[in-house]
Length: 141
Image (cartoon, rainbow, N blue to C red; front, side, top):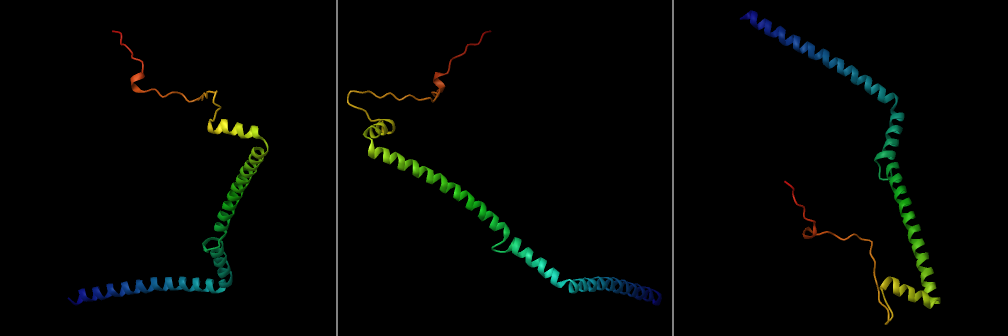
């Protein structure tokens, strides 16, 4: 019984010793990490700050680039609407100054006609075939 207790205590001592060696190893690694951080603390602070400002913050470079792209899209849209506005102003000036232009718009857009005229509307759309209009095929045996 004494022998087994001695073996047990030797085993426990060996485990504690191994644990202390491992703890010492990680403590030295931790101390070297703290020394590294202490030595380069200003550089690390600057790098982390720049990363925060460049990527994570509310006014980051990514968001600024997205907003810049959105601004360009909106400027293109403004140009499109300005062209439409200029075209509409030209049409309005033509309608105010030329009575034939009013007649042309009335005929083309609103299909208006004189009393003695007929209107024909031509379409390029293909007619839709219904299932009843399909040609019937006969099977040859």
